[in-house]
Length: 232
Ligand code: SF4
Ligand code: SF4
Image (cartoon, rainbow, N blue to C red):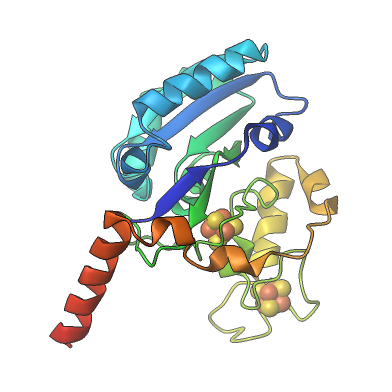
């Protein structure tokens, strides 16, 4: 299970500058269990947005948002509401935000930070990866994680070694993550996001937070880990 916490509200609100209408996406998997992305939290988010004068075109809570095929299918049922929105807010771990971004040509904002507790994504092992960094950057990168898509985990643009869109490390098999981010933002007409300078990352947020270590979630993750090691 991937553990998520809601981002501070001012941060979420700052993503919406210049945008009026929003479609909400939640997750009935890990995010529902963490009380960050189930129906209750989506309705609370809707209310907060309405109070800020925003329009909420609709919402969808998807069972396992890490499954791109499922996300696409569920969002097809809300096509008009999604197309009427300027952007989507996704209330889930970083995988869910990336999976949603991969299937819809709209700007997608993360509502949560994914917290390191040693878990794995819910049900579906897609190509998206999250390092549970505790301070999600996906708003700035078109929904592609710079920590996992870039071999060096660079957060402020490419290293300069890419050629023809391929990473300088294993160019035969790896795309340059920052080339992918550039192409995605260009397609969405939001290359302006690339001019934001991200402050040096606080890597201590990648440590499992002390307040979650005495919890049942931590105990269960580590029980699973022990079983996996014993089975090898
Ligand atoms: S920036 Fe990447 S590693 Fe950090 S929470 Fe978002 S998806 Fe996960
Ligand atoms: S070539 Fe691209 S993906 Fe590879 S390390 Fe440089 S910026 Fe990162």
